[in-house]
Length: 557
Image (cartoon, rainbow, N blue to C red; front, side, top):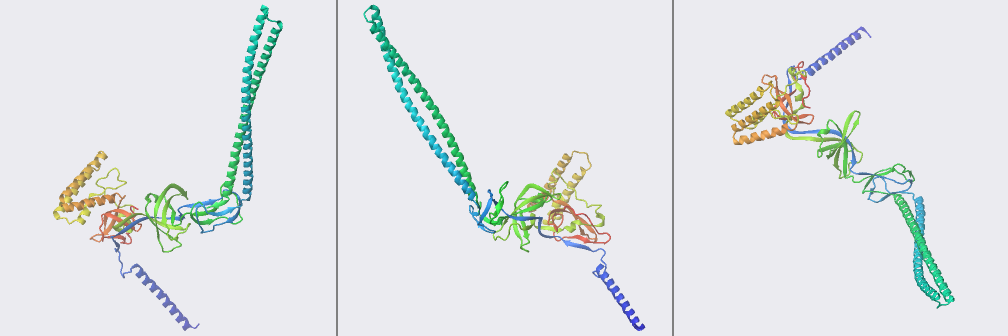
């Protein structure tokens, strides 16, 4: 390279460096001063407008059918037939699979044969009982005959005894022969023997009847035992019949098969629990979502709340549901307490499938056509109200014992709304300011004293009521109706756990001017203003001197 070439190259290199530095300088000016000139005290403003505030809780959950039935097998065996597959529509009682039942049928035949044998034994025992009863009746008839013989022999014996006594008397007087006396004695002894014999036969017949009674009781006991055995055999037959019916796996409900866990020829083992063969959803037109709700959000979830959700299967589409139930049971996942909320969803076109993941937004609160401002306005603070010096909250004029649940409405807020909504005359404004000033004096006079807090609250409440009555007396009947409506509206707003916040507007001197506001619902980006700020008012959301602008903590959220 010659000297001239080197000089040209050096000149080009210097020109390139100069161009880069110039571009960088221009870019810095444009970046730091986009308007062409520094704006050291420019504030970024946002206008309070009217619109809807929808507060919601985000969650995820799994879509499931309302009723899912797990169909299993109570028997072990080989699956020989499958009659339902995935997505099959089934009816209640329909057979969806069969298990090999050859062994069960053989057991059933054997059990039925045992049952028939026991029934035959019962017939034998019943025959024996009838025979014993007949023998008993026969023995009783014989006993009756023998007892009649005893009576006859007793009569004959008595007659023979009389003849013997008569012959003996005649012999003693010498009128009868000795032979006649002997004959009478022999006859008497023979009749006595016959009587004893007949009595012995009666005793024998009674013993036979007793024996037959014992035989009858034994036969009846045997019959009872056979009957019990028949019941046992019958139960065994019914059990085997149940097993035979269980070899046919049936659907318990009308629905659709969403899962099949069995294959043809597979051997299922039902030892400790029934194996899952099918999973049937009763009605896919009605689904449920089991949503996981963090414990910090569960207090805002109520049955009936509207819920919107999306699924990955249908990008850009939004589905709707309603909160059905918030379950009391909780579970802890990585030290986070989770509750389950059940969302009821209509699925008429069967687009939502079981197992889909749903990204939900549960609408916990809705405010329509309210004054709202960006949440950035509630966070912005000028240098004088940096985080170490938080914004003061306006003191309540009268606070009851339950202010934590419902913060009381300040009279100044009512007056502000009244002056904004009602055309007041200068004289009315002067009288109203006097009433408010009197109330403030009553309230501040009690601060710092050592009186009873309950008495102080009662004093402030009475003063507030007197001020309300004075203001109502200043207004015309039409204005008084508006005044009552404002009181009611703000009271309802105060009962929604409203919080006090502070925003800043640009004052007449160009400096930030604080405004105390009552904050209602929030959707994360905007907050409802219940009182303290009108629509179309401009609030500061950022900007200002760079060395002074600081952001304070978010208030009320």
